[in-house]
Image (tube, rainbow, N blue to C red; front, top):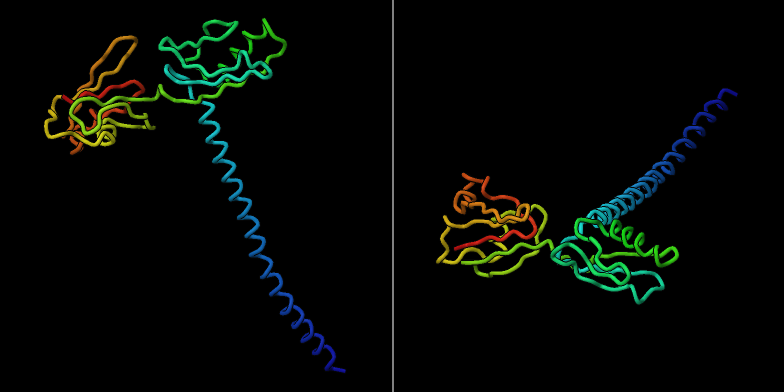
Length: 214
């Protein structure tokens, strides 16, 4: 009779030992599922972030925008933003576009068309971003316009233009910028910017800036 409790303990131990691996094998599956959810959430966040940046972009002169008015092909069209920041549309004539986001411009057009249509559905998209450009001219390998990248500096723009030629006057480089309708010049110390002695001259560029390399 004294052997029965001992056998019971042994049997219980065996059952516990047999159950342990099943729990261990289930844990990685749970972790994998959790990791999959985290990856999906990260992808959704990235997509939402990109959409938010696109929604925050403000239209500028020379951009080309497409205006779609649902079931109104005569009004729907692609138009360039004029230098004065306005666009021309049927029924509305001149509409201010520069400085607005796509959603803000769509709301403005919708309000204007509401005088002529019942509940117009308007969608605005930027098909060509031309206002975010800078220009490099003079003694560089490749003159011309460049797309303005985020946090782009003078050195980066010159590098993108292929660098200076052997005839470039490094101490005479300057940046021309339009401020409140007036042109302002900013000197640029090429060697100082390269060496880090005068990084303050390596300014962040803005749309429409022109780098002149004599």
